Length: 151
Image (tube, rainbow, N blue to C red; front, side, top):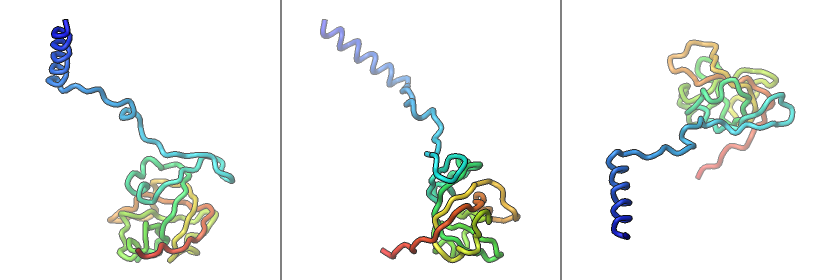
C-alpha cells in the first residue's frame, strides 16, 4: 500500500514538473501602489517617495501629492530642478530629475540646497527637453535639510 501511495505522489510531482506549471503567487497579480496616507494641511493623501523611486516609476505618482527630498538646483537653461544629489545636479542629468514648479513655495529660494518638501506631481513639463525630466512637482511647504555627510 505504501508503495502505491509513493508511486502516486512521485507521478504527480513528475507530471507537474514536466508541464512546468507553478501557480503564480497571489501578490504578483496586484499592482504595487504607493503607501499614501492622510497628512495635516493637505486635502488628499500624501505619498512619501524616494526621489529614486519617483524617477524609476513616475507613472505611479502622477496626479498625487508627494513628500520628497532632493537637491534643488538651477539647470544650465535656468529651469529649477530637483535632483537626487548634488552630484547629479553637477552633471545636469535631467533624465534623472524632476522639474520644480513654484506653488505655495518658491523653488528659487531653495536652489543650491538639499530640501524636503511636498507637492503635486504631474507628467507635464513646460519646455521641450532632449532628455526629458520624469515630471513636475508643484511645490507646497519645503524645508532645507543638512547636506549628507561624506562616507
